[in-house]
Length: 94
Image (cartoon, rainbow, N blue to C red; front, side, top):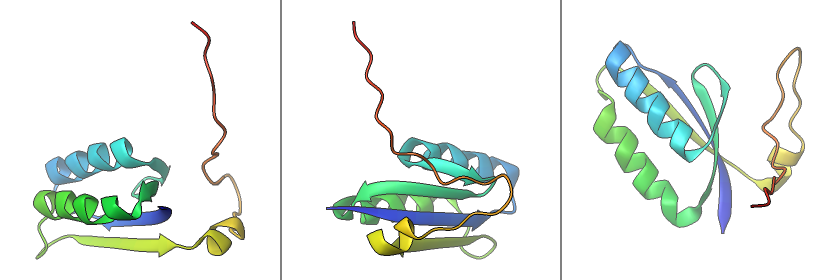
């Protein structure tokens, strides 16, 4: 079963921050500079958390991982320029 997870971070060192951003981009969509939305299987949440833990310094950095239920995510509101990531599928013919 897939879940939507919001991951927000405050990482003090540039190198760790870049590594974390690259990791999260491979798992989901960036919606703010340090905020990602990841749609992953429930069995993938543990491995994602483990990978994040290997990158960051838990004494200096802050990471928030928030599971979003389907109802909560469908009722999301944005103000200004923000838009939630779209889930439209695109198909390309070869």
